[in-house]
Length: 342
Image 1 (cartoon, rainbow, N blue to C red):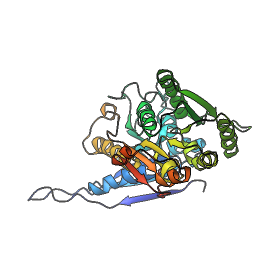
Image 2: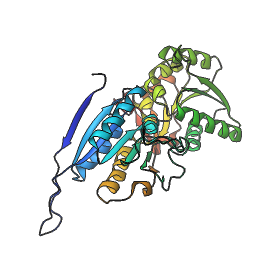
Image 3: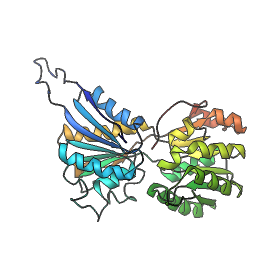
Image 4: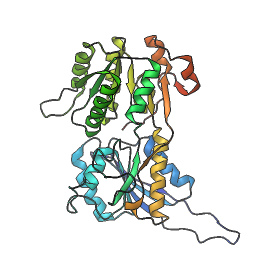
């Protein structure tokens, strides 16, 4: 079987809510979870929320394993089993499941089952919604991305730079949106961007060889820092970026947790995936338990972010944060074995 499938059933029942007791909930909510590349801390946070709040739920998990072609099969299965709610991970899966504004066809997309997305960098830019207040569609969810302006400010608080290298996957919507925003910011900040897309293979897909080739091109331009955007492919292959960068003594800033905790990127201003997953579960609870209309549930992000610094990378590069940052940053040493990949 090309993708794993299993059912994780939480036999959790509501406890007494009053001195006289309350009628226990015996039928669990059926939630279909459509993932892109395995279970991350976002899914762990989502499911843990249901457990901690004693909300009975049956989680039916399907993983595309980074193969977009599998998502159509998940949609067909959802129509057959009719879950109470669908959870989608990331921009790619969500766009395939619900369609984008102006291109949402009931024949190919889910339009009649509530959908809660998680780990979507820019819901408006990706045309999943035109407003964060309410989508007006059968979808709501959570964004994990820290505003890019705040990320650049965090980078500059570590080291003032004039040249920022950016390696990105040109086939990834999130990456292209990030590049556009960085270009706008760069003009305001007198920052020179050195943009290098990953080299695509004969089938127009990004590859590990393309990452190495792009990094060598980028490093030849002598960037002072390299930026990894919120991009599934780049996060998965962040170790290649870091290896090439560290060999050239260039630090790496990442928009998400995993490259810092797992792969040796120096720092980033990030959202904690587990907490983002919990926020997505809260959205699901509003729909399932409180019977809110999904189209009216606002799309949100965390209101607190983590300034994450990898001290193992700092030691290897000989680049240490200012003392002032020790008061606000979370310091990790080497690899924390966190699987928070988008």
